[in-house]
Image (spheres, rainbow, N blue to C red):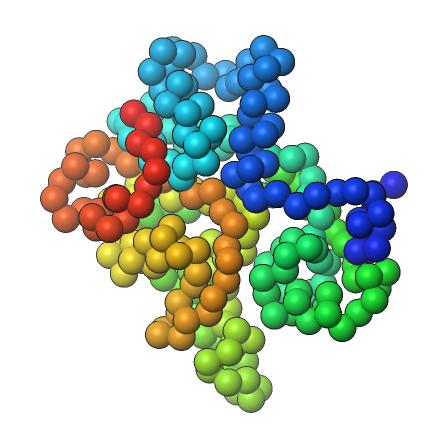
Length: 247
């Protein structure tokens, strides 16, 4: 039986790891076992795959650069296999993210751990297949992947400058998971700035209100060389913060 509350989780000996620590550990275990690392991927044994392997060991966010049909998306999705099969989270409906039971980042998660006895903090389990999300850049808005102030919450009396007033986008909701952005050069510059802030500071800023979250993510990007190398398509600050270029 899996632990169903915080006390049981502590008694089980489960330890908390970041996404990149989790991926690195599971990747090295797979490497040592001599199993196939990327089933179904053929022809990249001497070029692309060694670059991915080094990036995983180094704990880097990655940009996959290649022409259409070169399995960029398939490779990004394949990294899910290096996540733990399931991880625990604080299972309360008011939490905007799936908080680490030992290190909650949301106000709701922190309040739950602080105000309840350990045996009363409910624990759910998040499967690795659900810890990956991707988005196609064209048409993507800031609110889609970062977030926006929720007018309904303001009407209810919540202050605009608090976390409770926000509706979170895909990236904050993928806390403790993997997020992939396809066709990065087609992404609006405002959204690129938001991504830069997440890569650099791992926090979220929505409409000038800084909401500090210690977001735990691996972020992946894909791009076509023709658009990626064109001047002005990707802001230099974002380019510089992507740890590894895979091509």
